[in-house]
Image 1: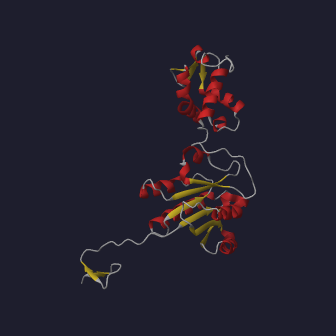
Image 2: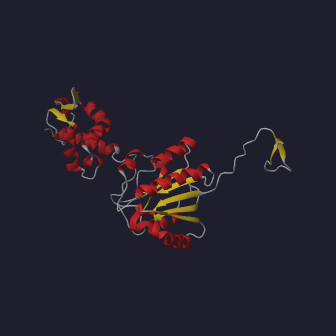
Image 3: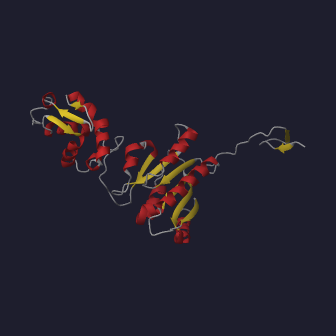
Length: 288
């Protein structure tokens, strides 16, 4: 006996010898997944500010998924349900099995739930709220599924020294939204691609390296104290030696080479400051 399937809008059952796949309609709106422990004591005000000021270009938040300490599930559910009555709230407890931080447990749960909810058509858009860098695979998977119009938003905070440098260095800005604690004003620079990629500042760094480095051979790490002395908060000022060398080669070397700095063979790689490079400095900048 042939199995019967009913197509949407059909008057009656249709016999089919070969089953036809009928896709379910995609869930509507955005599902927001929040790692509350990552947000620490500011979690409630940051979540409320995020939903209250949700960007118009992103589908509205219809599902709020909170990942909290296991003994706080009832309290968080009470708070979120009263604050956001128009949103479907789900609170999941993350069990602490040791005295160590268990943020990875929350991260894994969020990643699994977010991808599962999307592929099962529970939601049409995924948003994650956390300053950790562990959600890049979620973005990568959604991009693999949907292409360039990736249905993903990463909500970060502007709290001092919380955001991962990996996010700053590699994640696309058009999939990031930064939220501030209401009433707290911070003097933040305008985004210019990855942090440290401001062309004007990079040109100033190149000038300073040429000015302060003596003629002769020098290592990439000899440049780090020069940068730190003038821009102590620049990302390159506090990088590990290996990463600093890579950043110098990628970001600064093209301009240094154009100005007359050379590379001397051997390992580790060494550079050579030349008189030709010194001569590119203006009299006001000075020559050493």
